[in-house]
Length: 219
Image 1 (cartoon, rainbow, N blue to C red):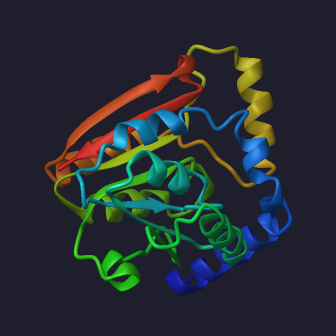
Image 2: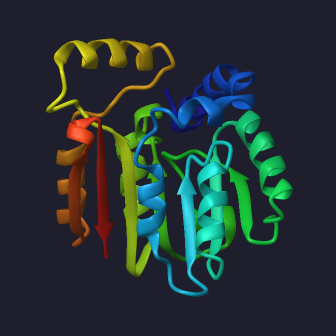
C-alpha cells in the first residue's frame, strides 16, 4: 500500500472513530491521559519560539500551552478533519486564533515547511499520539529531523505497566485496543536509535509505575 493510501485509510478510521466522540473526548481523556500537563510545563520555549503539536486532536494541549507560554507561537496538525473542526472552534472560543495555527497533516509524512512555512521548529510534542498512529516510528524520525538547534521533541504516552499488576495491564490494554490505541513497547529502543542517528541527547523516564512513559530528544 502506498504512503498516500495508508494516510487516507488512517484519516477515514480517525474520522469514523472520533466523529461523534470528539464532542466529549477531552472530558473522558482527562481521567487517564496522565502526564500531559507535566509535558506542557517542561516545554519552556523562548520568547518568539515555535511550538508544534503532532496529532493535536481537539487542541486541548495547544490551548493550555499557549496560555502558559504567551510569547511563543503555536502550530498543530491532525489527520482527522472531524477533530480539526472541533479544534478550530475551541481555539477561537479561547481567543487564540492569532497565536495557534492549525492544519491537516499525516504524522508519518509531515513537512513543517509545507504545512506552516517553517524551516525548523524549537519545540515539538506528541501527547498520546504515537499509540494511535501506525507510522509512529516515522513520526518520531520526522519530528527529530525538524528540530532547530537547541530544539527538543517531547513525548508522553502509555507505558508498559512495568510496576503495576498484570491483570490491570491486560484489562486496560484491551480497552485501548478497542479504540485502535496500541501502547508501543518498542518506544525506548526507537528513541535510542533516533538519538544516535541524529546526534541528539535522550531523556527517558517512566511515570506512575510505568503507566506512562515520558521522553525528550534534544538537539
